[in-house]
Length: 397
Image (cartoon, rainbow, N blue to C red):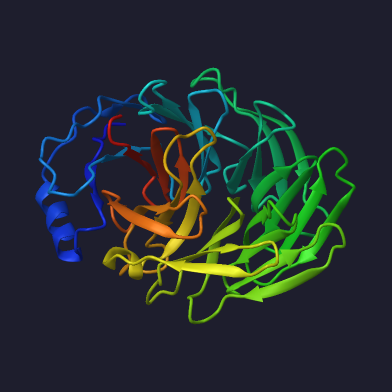
């Protein structure tokens, strides 16, 4: 499969919308050095593009490069195998697990290979790294109603991943979408039956099902209160679960802030959530939930961000020396009037006040940008409909 990585640049938020578009147009003819090549199902990346255009005053420049993956209609989740230069990506339309090989120094994607994981119609979706089973990941088969413990065999790009264990979703639950591991418990959103599953993976007979509003997407534990929060995109509401008592409550998203909570993760001081908005417009809104369930909302201020449809978010990996900041992913998944963007929001040390915003457009727009994975010196984003990953390289790397 031959393809050329496409590259663009990162622009500081002090550029207005018109200037931003002119810069993209002026760079559209610049070619990236190197190609992706290999046998069907395998891609190998060539040398990285080096920017040769002088940036405008005040702009901070970085490179965005896209890499072709083996063909699929839907490319979804992305995780890194700890201690290995291997990133894993799920392709839902054909239930394939893609291995991406990283250069150990530059983090550049150097090769990719896809492997079938179960039947082609099982709808491989959720991925999360297991702490209880080092070197393994948990995955979901959304249409087959199965949870999988997988050995990705991360020592070699060529080694075929192995399903070591399958757990059927109990109690009539359907459509396991997202999975995460908290000790011996897996927390799983069931998009098909609009439920949330808490399952002891050491004794699967021990489980609880919580009813949710349509449709539960992400679940995360509050780092202070210990409660679990779940985003529900169609209901535009957050489900709060007390895992000690089993009590649940709903927190509606205020209409004046926006709608459609999707991305939701634990982070500094609470649970962080983003709003996607509607087919007409996003609102560039994200917020942090405190220990009492109160939400401090933030809105992007730059013209590119004010109508951004935010789908996902992520924090830097532990040990990263960057200033406090949050990565946001804007997507065209519900509107062709939106933009596919990687956004960096800088915070003060208290994580209460935004101090800056930076924006990078994905080279291929209308790709329905889907998930983010920050690394030490770069950040990866999956493109749902493009069978690609985009990589934003930090300045100096």
